[in-house]
Length: 152
Image (cartoon, rainbow, N blue to C red; front, side, top):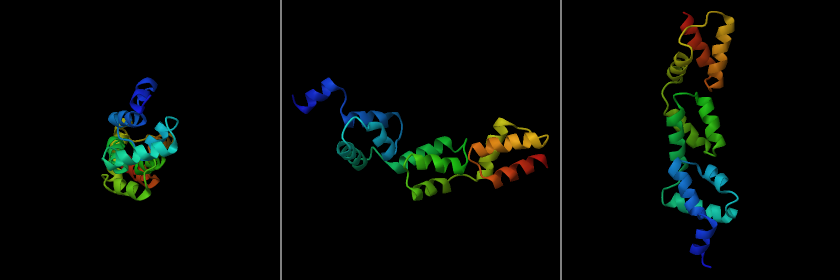
């Protein structure tokens, strides 16, 4: 049985599986390698990934850019950085993506207005709003400044 016949009986080839995943959304090399693990040997997976990079179907920079574009309206720079790190994006590429974002205070204000819209009435509510913004990855100084402006 040749390779083409084998892939018909055993399901899609490693390359076909990788292309299917990339058709749904951009993936980093590390993410795609993780999703393909168990479907082939590490050497086969690395070969497929190298081929996909060479023909332009796989790009860490494009995946990072797509992620940041899609999530910058909801998360702060710290959260975006952390998620990109877990996706295997190199540190210098992460910093390039984060540097292109609008001012963090502007993004934090938009998130805060969607969630709360009114200034905290007391210390307990101030803490609640601050914790929410912190969980979204906004810097402590940005949160302090935003909540101070809202109560002024």
